[in-house]
Image (cartoon, rainbow, N blue to C red; front, side, top):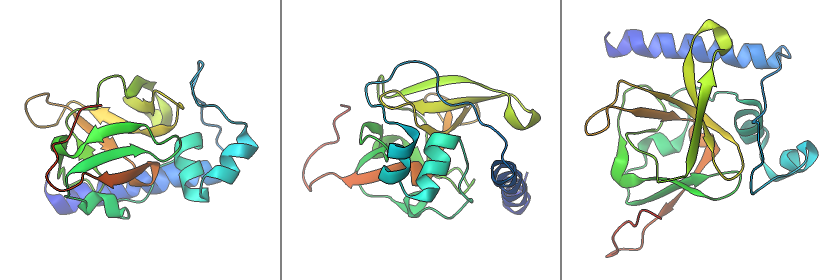
Length: 170
């Protein structure tokens, strides 16, 4: 599939997902107990409307809209909801999809669960600390894992590593 066709398909799927959310489709909230919890009203006060839509309602940001897609410095990508480190810049790669992509999450940083929304089967990725929706993981990534963690940039923040320091995995 060429990049133009891929971009078209990604944009079309994103539009469907955002339209479904806007039309009041109920998205499942994370199950289970998390270390960081807030009421729905508190989440709305803590997050921007776009962050709330993605992290708490499993929305999707438009492709190529996040500055984190073009972030290439050494450092960590963390959850915008609770600040937990999720991914090292060492595992980031350009997937051509329009979303920040990684081939490996930090140990114990994310949870994965089946997602059958929108008539397809995918694997949803959640922050293990607050249960925020981050994106999905696919089996079409590069070596060594073969995984592509396709994340919403708005669901994350980036902290650059100080010059001269090595990225640590925790």
